Image (cartoon, rainbow, N blue to C red; front, side, top):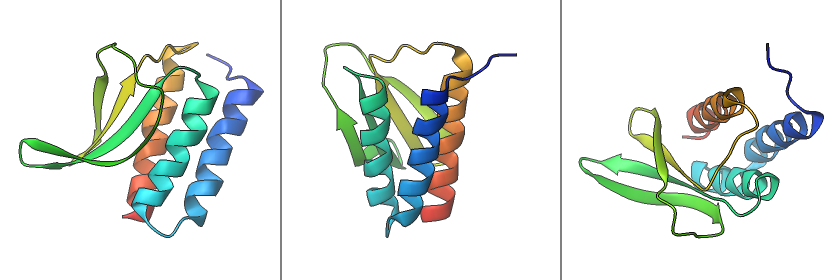
Length: 108
């Protein structure tokens, strides 16, 4: 079983507490994206909502790069785009996806 670092746990906790203080989904995702991209430097994270075949930008933060982003459809109609992320362990990515679901369900 993978043990998460205290820094990672603090980052996730901060995302949850800060996003719950926000008034709406866009603000919550913006705040979380900023916290996550500060934890993972030189990355970019943005969120989008699907309208048919088109994705509409909701919120995001980070540094743009020429690396192809990874689209993760974490909930019906919502996706996170991760650019230049490298995780210490794949479980970190799974926790972030769960975090995105929690924030989206509570704030939408």
